[in-house]
Length: 444
Image (cartoon, rainbow, N blue to C red):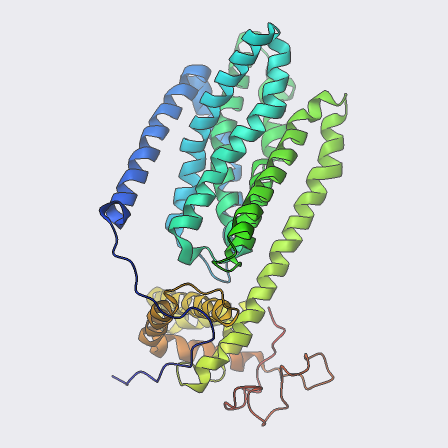
C-alpha cells in the first residue's frame, strides 16, 4: 500500500487542543437511546390523540392524503444538499421530531392556551382567533426550532452553513406539516361524513386543495427562516457568542411573524388568504430558493479554491479540485464508477466527493479563524477517508474532467483576476502542476 503524503501546512486559526473526556451522558448510545425513546413515546401519544379526534376511518383517509407531498418535499431538500450531503440519520431525526415531538408539543400547548383564553375572556370565538394568530405561531415555531438547535449543538460537524440549516429546518417542518395535515384532513372527512357532502364541494376536498396543493411548502417556508439564522451562526467564529445567539433568535422571530401573518390571512376579508399568498408567500418562497441556490454555488467555488492546497502535498491529483467543484463532473464520475465497478464503486465515489467537500469547508473555516479546536483531528480523518477510496474515485473524477473537453478561460475572458493562470504556468498561489485543459471552472 502506498505511503500517505505529508500533511499540508495548516491555516491560521485554532488547530489543536485536547478533546474533553466525554461524560456518560455525552456518550453516543446514551443520546441515541434517549432520543429514540422520546420520539417513540411522542409518536404513540400523537397517534392516539389524532385517532381520537378523527376516528379510525378519518385517520386513515387523512394519512393517505397527507403523505402525498412528503416525498416531493424531502427530495427537494435533499437536492439542495447535494454539494455536501448530510447523513440520512439527521434527516430521519428531523422528520421524526417534527412529526412526533413538535406536533405533540403544539397540540397540547395550543389546546391548553386556547381553553385558558376562552375561560378568561368568556369569548370562545375570540380565543380561537387569538390562538391561531398569536399562540400557535409562537408554540409551533419554537417546537420545530428545537430540532434545528439539537442538530446544531450535537451534530456540529454536519452543520456548517446556510444550506444545512435550510435542509434540517425544512425536513423538520415537513414532518410537522405531515402530522398536522392528517389531523385537518381527517377532521374534514369526519365533517363530510356527518353532513353527507361528497366530491369537489366537500370540506375534505377544500382542505386538501388549500393545504396540500396550494401550500405544501408553508410550514417549511416558516421554519427555513430559523434554519437560515442557525446556518449563518454556524459560519461565525466560536468566540462571536452574541452573533451566534442573536442570529438564530432573529430567524425564529421572522418565522413566527410569517406564520402569524399566514394564519391571520383568513381574517383579512374574503380574499385575504389569496392576497397574503400572492404578496408574501410566493415572493418569499422565490427569494429563499434563490438564496439557497446562490449559496450552493458559493460552496462549489469554495471547493475549487481550497482543495488545491492538498494537490501540492499529493493528497489529490491536479484535476480533482476542478471535478469536485462541478456538480456535472461529480455526476459523471459516479456514473463512470457505476458502469465499471457497480453500485459499490458509485457509493465510494459519492462518499469521496462528500469527504472532499467537507475538507474544503473545514480548511475554509480554518483560514478565516473559525475552525474548532479539533481542526487537525478532523482534517486527518477526512484525508484518510479520501486516501482509502482514491483508487476507485480518482480515475472516475479524472474521466469526468477529460469528458468535458473545455479549455479553462484565460485572464480577461471571465476568470477572476488572481484566480487563474494561463495554461502551463501552474496553480495560482500554490505552485502546483497546471490543471487539465479539459476543465471549465464555471460548470455546475
